[in-house]
Amino acid sequence: MNRFTSRQRKLLYAVGIVVLLGPIVYLGFPSQQSATAASSSGLGRLSQLRHDYSLGEATLGEVDPSSSAMNLVLLGLRGPAASVLHLKAIEYQERKQWAKLRTTVDSIILLQPHYVQIWKFQGWNLAYNVSREWDKVDDRFYWVKEGIKFLQHGTERNNTIPILEHNVGEVIDKKMGVSDEKKFFREFFVHDPDEKYKDKVTGINGPDIEINNEGIDSYLVARKHFQSANVKDDNDGIVEVKGMTHVFFRQGPVKALLNYADALTKEGKFSGAAPASAPVAAASDETPSEMNSAGSLTASVWKQAYDEWMNDYGKYPFLGRNNHKYILNSTEAELAAMAKENGINVEEQRSDWNFSVNMVNYRHWRDYAEMESDPVTISAHKSFVEARTAYAEGRGYNSVAPDGTTQISEAQKLLEASMDRWVEAAAKYPRLFNDFESYLEEALLSVRYWKAVHQNNGTTEAADYPLKSLWEMHPEMHLEIDRQFLIESRSRKK
Image (cartoon, rainbow, N blue to C red; front, side):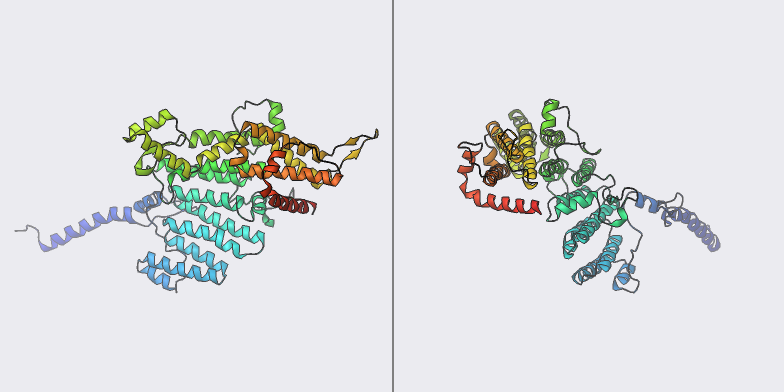
C-alpha cells in the first residue's frame, strides 16, 4: 500500500512541479534582446540557441492584424499565411503599388526567413521585373539596388547557405555588366545618382555603401560575393550546391575577374592604378616598357584571371556524370589517376571529363584569357581605342609641314599600328580570327576606319596594307562593319 497520505502526495506533486518549472522557465522563456537585437544571457536559453544557430523564429512578422494572413499566423499556419501574402505581392505588382509590394515582401520573409526560394525569387523579381517597369534609368537602378539589398539581407538571415551569397554576386555581375542599361549602371554603382550620396566637400556623388562600401568596380564587388559563397560551400560539408550545378557555381570569382578585365579593355582603361580591392597579378615576364606600352592594369588583371582559371578553378575536384571525380585542367597522367580512383577505364574518364569541359566552355575562356593577357593583343586594342578617339576629335586629317611635306594624321598612324599588331597576333595565335568573332570584328572595323581616313583626305590606299587579306576574305561582314562604323562615328560626333 502507498505509505503517503493524500495530502502528502499532493505536496510531493506540488514540489515536483515547482522543481520542473525551474529548468523549463530557464530554457524555454522568450529571449530578452537588447537594442542591437543581440540575445541576453540568462533566461530563454533555447531561444538563444535557436537564434545563434538559425533554427527557428519567434517573430510573427509585420502582418496586418486585421488580415486573413494574421488569422492564419495565429493558428500556427505560417506557410499558408506566406502564400496569401505572395498573392498580395503579385496583386500589388500588377497594380504598380510599389510601396505596398515592398512592405508585403518584407512581411513574407519575416514569416519564413529560412525559406531560400523566397529570397531568391523576390530578390530577382525586384532587380529584374520591378526595375523594368520604370522609364528613368535612375529609377531602374534604385529597384535593382533594392533587389540586391533584399538578397544581402537574405544572406544575413541564412549565413550558411552558399547559393544566396552567389545570387547576390550574380545579380550585381549581370545587371551592372550585361543589361541594356549597363553603361549607366556601372557608373551609378560607383557614383550613385541619388543626391543623398553627394560628398559635401567635393560635390561628387559616392556609392550606396549598403551595396558598395569600398567604392570599387561592380565586377570586383560581385567577385567578393562569389568568393564568400565559395567559402561557405567549402564549410558546409556538402559536395554539391542545392539549386545550381557545382562546376558553374565554383567559377563565380574567376568569371567576375574575367569580366572585369574584359570591361577594362572595352572601356579603354589600359593603365592606371588598380583599386585597393582589385587583384594584382604576380610578377610579370614582360619588361616595364612593354607593360607600360600595352597597359599595365589590363595586363595584370588578365594574367591574374588566366592563372586562377588554370589553377584555382581548373584544379578544383568536381563530381561529374555517374558521380565520377574529375578536374577541368587535367593532364593525361591526371586523367589516368582519376580513372583509377573512379574505378573506370581511361576512355570513360576522358568522356566524362570532356563533357564537363565543353559544358563550361573551359577551353574558350582559357584561350581568350591567354590571348588577352598578351602585350601584342593589348597593344592592338589600345591603339584602336586611341585611333577612334582621334578620329572623333577631328585628328584624322593630314597636314602640310612648312617644308611642304605631308604629315600623316594621328588617327591613321594609330590605326596602322593597331592593324600591324593584329597581324602579329594572328601569326602568334593562328585560330585568333576563326574562333573569336570579337577579334575579327575589331580587326575589320579598324580597316574600315583606316579606309575612311583615306577617303576624308582624298589619298590613295596602299596596294598592300595590313589585314588586306582578312578584309577581302570576309565580304559578307562588310555591310555590318559599315553599319557599326556609321553608328560609332555619329554617336562620337554628338
